[in-house]
Length: 155
Image 1 (tube, helix red, strand yellow):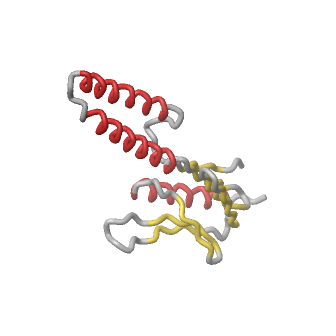
Image 2 (image 1 turned 90 degrees about the horizontal axis):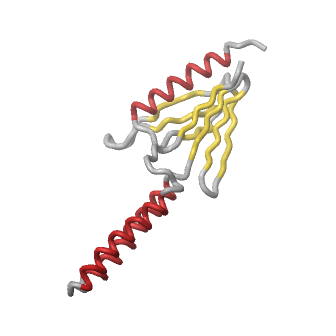
């Protein structure tokens, strides 16, 4: 039986490679308009346009940094493997498939989302930080079904 793969990543509507192109386009348009207005005598607009574009650049940089993570949950006959990949950080956890448990930990405050955790023998790993509550519940059910299916297969 083939192992099941679940890939978790943020929903990014903008490709990471296109982000610099978007920023350059915004800078050209904004500074172009500010330069035109400066030539007409409204020179105070230019410094504010530059500060505005620096702020937009900072926000796009932070968005790019926070969307650079992926999680992969692999369920096979023997193990549940969780691979967490960020820009400079890679971690791998491995749990026996027969002992792996899934739990949705209720939030401390009611406006927080419940945390989805996988674990065994007292070691728990949180997955799906970028998912909504419905997506976390759906993922928990799908992983539970896959664990039951893989653990019922006899070698």
